Image (cartoon, rainbow, N blue to C red; front, top):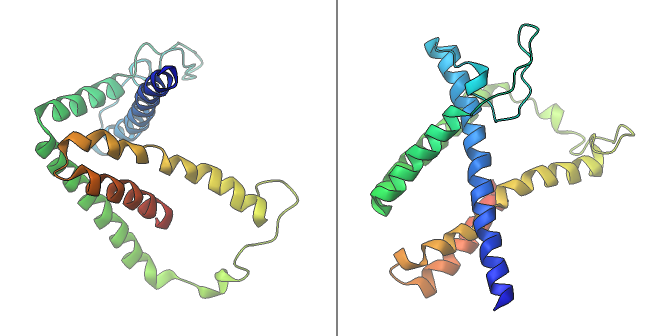
Length: 182
């Protein structure tokens, strides 16, 4: 029972840190979008994590709060509280937009493909670990491993599934397959 207690609290910590990491990542994108496309500038003091050293115009104040991350987290929390169907609809819309962007980039870039660049398939290592060669493949695998974090989150929705004994293994293994392929 102690092991289960430790694992349960570990999962809660994992989900909290994962959500915070994603919120901070979204915050950076949202801040850039607001600045570049809408001309809205959020002061760095309110757009970075607390205790972050910001070097702008010769001064280095500490950030107070990452306001966009807090607002994004609050918005997602409200969406989840509203209900699973609404969350699923929003998730479906976001996935459709992401897939559409990927398809547009592929179709738009297809004319610029130069197959001569495909040889050698794995370039020779430059002599430094992680630069090309198999050490580069291993370094890339370490970065891509982050894509697998959260694959077990499917199991949290077991109460929402119509047939959890059938649907949960399909969801977990399906998410692993999708992460492996993409």
